[in-house]
Image 1 (cartoon, rainbow, N blue to C red):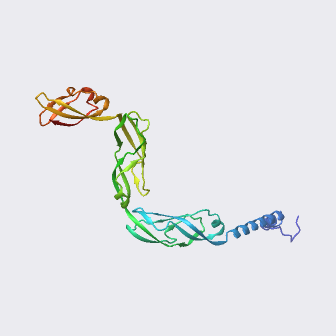
Image 2 (image 1 turned 120 degrees about the horizontal axis):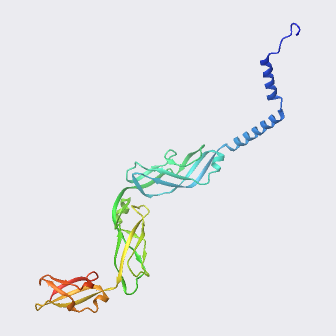
Length: 296
């Protein structure tokens, strides 16, 4: 039985003393080591993140416009002065810059470059302080479209007794988009050269188009080109009697093997004297062309 006048310990006070003993007394050497490591890391990080300023030279500058095209600019590189976290600035390997000229009217324009209108992908904590030069001259042209024919380019020669009868591009015309000054001079779009060496008959190839001006873009990148190849053709003159005491001078054009041994009487003359018509033998119908007829 407790003596009279003795007080029971307060459980709340006992719990608080227990917590304080665990925090500040027990394992104090481990807690001191953890504190030391934390302080060392904090000093190391804050030491590296001190502010600095650095200049980056010959930064590539690109200009873009949704309304027009930039056909001439006096500069394409700028110098940038950056400031911010030293660690992040030191990690920058290369930079690129761009400026949006949308909204400017076509013509010769002076553009002022500022940190607000020049976009440079920078890490957080780094900003642009200065740009040099801060003014550039540019020429803006209106973007237009033009429908131009496809020009088929070839290289190499066929055999001595062969020739190209026809060459056809599908599509035969291409829509080109670009600045006015480029389209004004553009008369056609050429295919890359197609080699004819070793070809002995008709063939079709898909061929890329050659765009010589980088400011122009085309509707599609290639076309299908079909060649008809056959025996070399010659022109031969026949004097054909009409049966009415007159003759007709007929000029035929076709494969040499079909014309060289032909005789005038194999051709039939019909129609009027003013407009004689020539009927060809069946084997010549699809291969030989009547170039002219004349009453003698």
